[in-house]
Length: 495
Image (cartoon, rainbow, N blue to C red; front, side, top):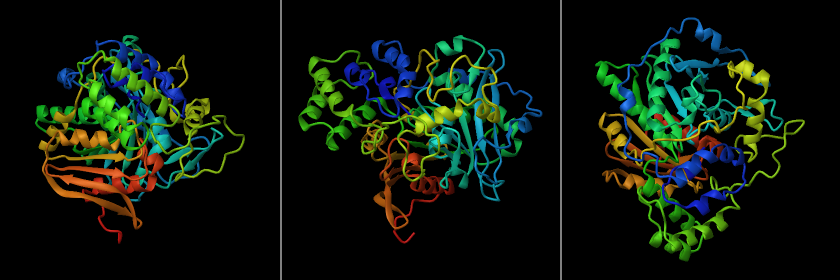
């Protein structure tokens, strides 16, 4: 989940401070202080990604006995499954006492030993991959409306890979630090360095994955996290003169990758999808300064932004056609649930479930007895000190190293919409290898795709919002299977 108040430096304070109270209310409140800091100061570093943390030596700690201690026998209210699951902590900085929480679900197939390892990161910055990726999107379970029991997700991505979910940075979800300064400020560079330290030590705990094909996936502000981590892996592999982590590719959905074009595309989407008038769209485009250096806006821009706010604050901007959550209360018995029809109140069910003491015990989580509730998005991290204005140079580097890069976009998301992603990709000026065309699943159009020379694929997912696997789970599973297999999406309804 991403709340883009955090991302754009221009002062659309009116538009962004009166956000609608949808199912995302808890997360918006959790990060409000971070966003206010970004909106009302110019202190955040928005230059290209600074890799200074990567020169630090990563300390490999003993992982003896920790794997079996992390084994989850069964989660409360969980239906029976045939795959193994683990949860626990990996120390990323021993001096600071900084440790990240992970949840790992082995692949469901009998031949899981040959399937790749796939890391999933949610964005924010400051939102939990356990809350969203694992429990509401691509993980093996969803939470019932009683907040106590789980049901299976038949479209879980552990049909295609061994799934690793990470809560990062420190202060997100169950991840913690014994150094309070770690909660005063977070940032892209520190997160990338810590995520790399996590991976190296996690692979010591699970050594059978050391040589396994490894992919990084994520959505939203993970459009920063994913390529930055990939860059860090490439750096350390080259520095060591060997393959420490066998990275093969990255895939990011509805991803923040270039602030200026991402923002322009957002307003283009509002106008082209009848959320605002043509006149307001023209006024925004004429008077608003979308550059990273803009700190104030003319009256005409703010006036138009206020009108945009009035029009969009009554819908869920993360899926402009989805219903809102009108009754967040838990039910005594589970409501009839369907993975194919996302419950707009799911956030509340997950919040209740992951704050149950018996659930935390089963997950081997909250070992420090946090003084605050587990939250889907952090209200512990106070500032975000560096946020690259663009990650396009990193994408170019990743492709230049022969790695697979896919970017996908749920086409009903208004927050990081398809128009934003197309605008940002166009900056790369890549030659087209396979022209824009529909792709199919079960004889229906699953979306549209275009393949570029240089190993970049862009795909839309039809009828999906910001969290693609939540709204179109079957299409999302098909997408990830083709990505991992290195095959193009089906261009015929016969498939």
